[in-house]
Image 1: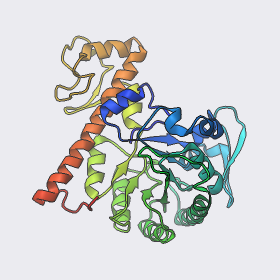
Image 2: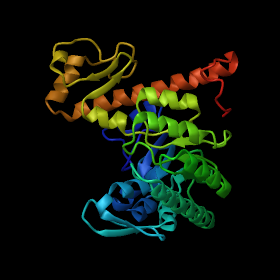
Image 3: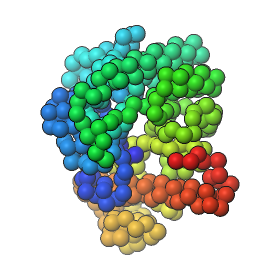
Image 4: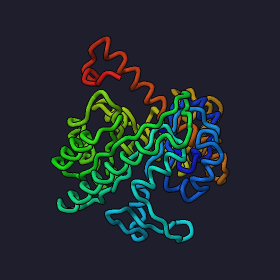
Length: 348
């Protein structure tokens, strides 16, 4: 899922996203709550109409962004008091208000309000954070069930429904992750996310936690790994059994001149590309690789042209989406051929 934090994938208009085959975008409740405001989006018909996007949208609860504020937040049983990174104004998020915000925004999939555990953390801290997330998950579900029909949204396929996913926490402790998964399943959600990763831990540890957590999540419901990863990682996680992923990497890396290709990563800012007439990736069919040379892309970046960020982002998104299309194709072949790399995948 490409990340469209402020109801926009930076630099890429929605028609190009459709052309690239994007099925679902991720928006961020914290940022949209601050600007332009949930009530403003609601008055304008919800996120789909506001941003002219006819396909699916997922909003995260804002918990991770509040976690990222560090010195600007205070966590209590009731929720989180935080100061805006924009103007320093004070705000409060609770499981209930986070549900109200996401119901008002009108996303198709919304997330329970959780606390993201920092890394490193001792076991006592990880348990306390997990317990708080579980209590907040119960409150999130209760409030959602009581208020989900108050705003008459129609989602992108025309049905009047939003889905609330639960989030598994527990830090880097495998036993706590198991307990969190089992108790979150007991609360009952139509989909489950693995949160609290990519917060500074070593990559091998991330994989270990993901793999061990997946053992305890149902295979007949979507399993969403939040905030990952590189193209190699998303293939690996898909093979483990992850169904949904999001990451800012393809867009953020593009803005810094780092491009993903079938021949490996390329830093387009390097002078060696200044006279290269070849396409960025000869094996890529995206509109960038079909039209522009590495020399031109390097020139745009070196000249600080806005078009550099746009074209770089379009290519990186195309590469990620092509990667996922290849994953889905492999899964399809695996069902027929019994390919060992995908035979453990659950049925959709």
